[in-house]
Length: 240
Image 1 (cartoon, rainbow, N blue to C red):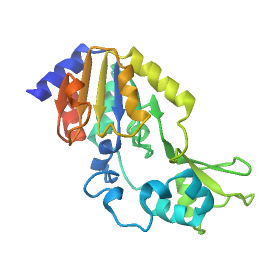
Image 2 (cartoon, rainbow, N blue to C red; image 1 turned 45 degrees about the vertical axis):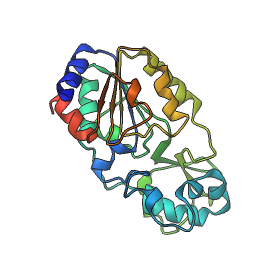
Image 3 (cartoon, rainbow, N blue to C red; image 1 turned 120 degrees about the horizontal axis):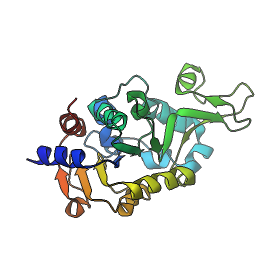
């Protein structure tokens, strides 16, 4: 019944915005931070949110990159049904934008064009000294633990670390898209990481849908809630 209702909502809508979190990529093999097998449940000498902070990166670049290379710099993965379904909706002219908390680039790999990456991307890296750009594959090919530019400067990923603010241009574009939407699909996120989670409050459209494995603080405020795998739900709703 819920699946049929979602299909009907999508059919009725022409300006859909998708807002997704880590749960969108778990079906591609990328672990959810807060899931049962996520990074926050694994054992490290220092909590992941500390390792992935600006101050830790500056003070302990070797320890940062040991964790980052092991857990974050994942390139041998492919888009799943959720990513492909959203790309299809955009091709059909029904999806305005994807707003994502993920840094894996899988939405673009599936064919989505308008993607606002709130937390940056592992695929964009730059030298802190001269600004030279590097890909994720460039970093993986480097022998040294801490990647170094040809000029000798340290390279850092263009991802938003803890203690850092979101890119204001990306945030403004995401807010504009959400305000313009007649339907918003929120999926694969616990809606506990701010300020990203607060973006839902800008939606003024007709249909607010939540797809997530577990309950969230927003469940009671949505027009439709489906507790299931994001990929399976969207694959069925879009008709892949």
